[in-house]
Amino acid sequence: MFSKSSSDSGPEVTGRRALRHLLVFQFKLAMDALRDFALSPLSIIVFIIDVVRKPKIEDSLYLRLMGAGRQSDRIINLFDEYSGEGHYTVDKTLAEVEEVVAREMKKKKLTDDRGGPRS
Image (tube, rainbow, N blue to C red; front, top):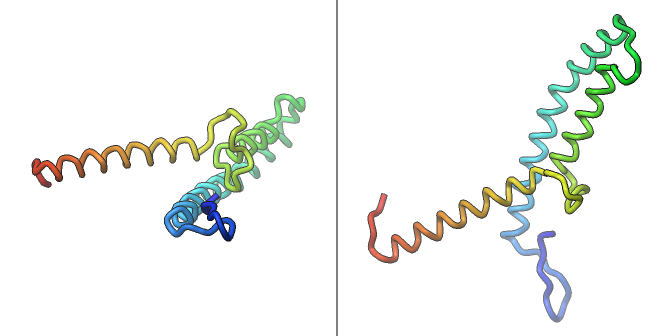
């Protein structure tokens, strides 16, 4: 996760990877909290609607909301339970953003090394 193998004493924690892992985890925690903040009142509302409407199970708004909650759980992937299962997770987007930022930083460094325009 955030360690590298050392030939003589086993894995050791690397500061940079551990910091990245912490920042990603905090971002995911915030997303999870926002999702929970939204789902809490929504669940009460759709429950009341279902009680009044008395729909068939397959038409229940409450059960649909629970399904959406499970799906958002997989997307947020807070504890890396869904990595490598072939569906979209926030981790994929963060990795893409990280690649773009690294590429742009490398371009900027090359431009600066060549004496190009500075901002």
